[in-house]
Length: 249
Image (cartoon, rainbow, N blue to C red; front, side, top):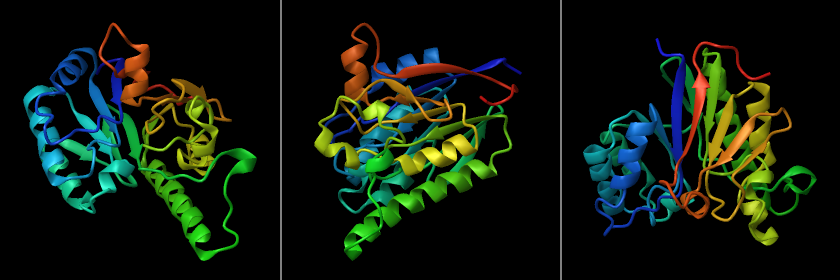
């Protein structure tokens, strides 16, 4: 059994109907540099079946390692999210939505997440019914993440999200949209279950990394952000996780 699992991650690839083979360099490089690829939401541009089929063809043709994915907000735009999931899963991607999956003794828990803001400025379920529904959606996503993490019996636990669980990795975005980029409610189960790392996207102009209150590293792997920082390499993040060792304290 290997000592480390190399995890590559990318988000916000926004595949278009005309994007056939556009991901060949990324998938080829990831297959060489990592043991698993995480696709952290906004896999399609408008949530169209045609876009999902383009992505599925690229995955089948160019990706040579296991992959795990979650949906992002763009993947819901056309009301075809279930079909998008089915097509991408058909190409071999393990799609998670409150589910858990294990690869080489490392556990992965995945959700889309939702907005609501961070810290003392997060939105509370008070006032109009539509505000309460907004907050309830975030709470439901946090509960799904908690249940997925609870299913894992691996010493190493990785959270795969689209929305951010901390403010640090959205820092750099216009402050006015921060409440729509993630929620601190997603941070709580991550710390409670002592995750080793968290990956998310959504904040294209945010910051590369930060840490939860419990000191869990959080990586923003939005492709536009990585492309701006990784001018000499393909825009995905790679970390190594030790296999079979205790989780981060």
